[in-house]
Length: 116
Ligand code: FES
Image (cartoon, rainbow, N blue to C red; front, side, top):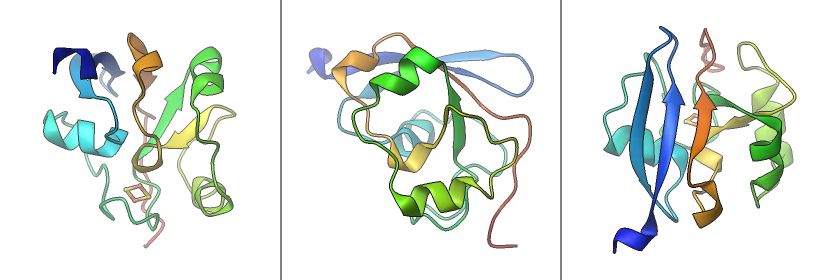
């Protein structure tokens, strides 16, 4: 089972780094919840594409490697996210793959909940 785990590092708002083992096939919201990564307000809609609080920022090369391209629904929701970048995704829509071993993902400095 160990082979189904990859190492993912989250760069948190306060500058801390948190390294977790991520299960291949889970989405990044699941990973954050399972590993109790403490990100205030993250994942408020529990992955139903209704909030944009699960906004994460990738390095360009990592962004390019994500196999699933964002859907129109995700892009619409991202437009409402705080601090949108060219390499932003919604964590609940990104599925972990084996290629993501060593991935470093930044948590945006702020959060806005599209439902408010
Ligand atoms: Fe709400 Fe991802 S958790 S859009």
